[in-house]
Length: 212
Image 1: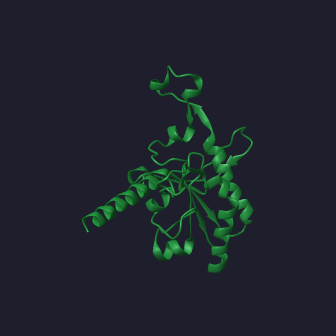
Image 2: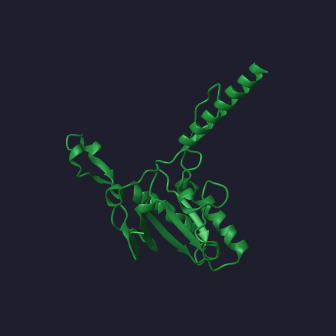
Image 3: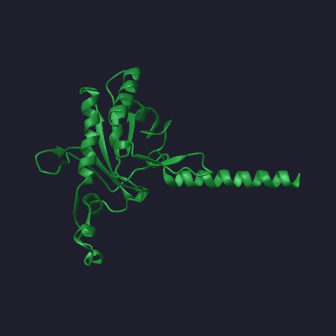
């Protein structure tokens, strides 16, 4: 881990509002340039918690003028980059920096319901956009683009204490390690890999039938 900071704040466009994560975690050596951390003690409504992810997306959409000499001859629009890419370089996943939500101070059922409620309310911020290309060989399957999405991973303090870093990634099923949870579900590369695997299986089956 390179850095763990608390009491950080980031102004939103206009300067009158700010995003204040409970902590900012940096571990580029394991593939996590930055992770915003929010701790929810079940004291505010799910609507207010969900609104935080909308604010994060607004924050991460902000662009600044690049100082990269390689872009010096580009048009003004081409010299604008997302500020966080300059502050925390090394992002390889599409989309914005991830946000981790740790919920606590309620019973297991209440915490489970709370996690799902926040997921439903914040879907526009984390869900990405669905794309489909209907072709003869993919049955209308599609993929999700995350360029304008905030990856959200969530767990409970009790799970962290009992099992270590296990996370639910909004948009995926089950519990995962940190790096697994940060992988984008239903992405185009996953669809492509799945289609290639299915196509290879059909070819193999056809070859077996032909030999038989």
